Amino acid sequence: MSQLGESEVKIIEAAKQVFLEKGLENAKMQDIADTAGISRTALNYYYRTKENLFYKIIEEILEGIIPHFENLLSKDTLSFQERFLGIIDVYADFLSRNNVVPRFVIMEMQRHPQTLFDFVNTNYKVKKYLQLIRAMLKREAEEKSIKQLPMEELVTLFYGLLFVPYLIDPFIKEYFFNEESKIEAYHRNHLKNMKQALLLFLSAKSMDQTVN
Picture 1 (cartoon, rainbow, N blue to C red):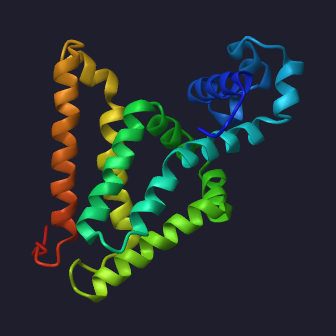
Picture 2: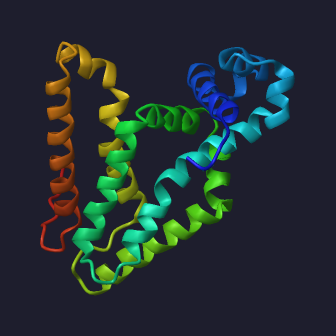
């Protein structure tokens, strides 16, 4: 997270909680103020509207991970596999410390897809990251080291595998009787299997099978 004061951090965490419970449309600024334990006047000092606060949350999420992606993607000495697996590791590390993010993103995609779509299309950092990803995939496909495939297919599979363990987190905890060692082992195994599945999916040597 960028350099924020204690009060602003408290506001952002409260807003995440309220947005998760009620969504952007139904959330009230007073709800956020109450959850943060501050007055509405104090909240307005930092954020005049809930939309501005929503965008700030998304920016904070991105600022926590995109610099790591840019560092990986700019290293010419790394192979495609090293870069790709490195990106997965960055996401996995971030989500292990911010496990409400997948639910927050998915819920707002369902409730306000246009809001997130517009943000992705107008945010400089996101656009730069996506350009680097597309350039890497295009280059590897031209060299025939990976398959050429629609970005939407890779995005769906990638984020599906990445997010689902956190979306079903309550079930996972119940299944393993809240035993931390077993839950951690589950996440380690899932991460390993995710990497193998995605590399196989991208591999130019893998054979497409027709499913009737």
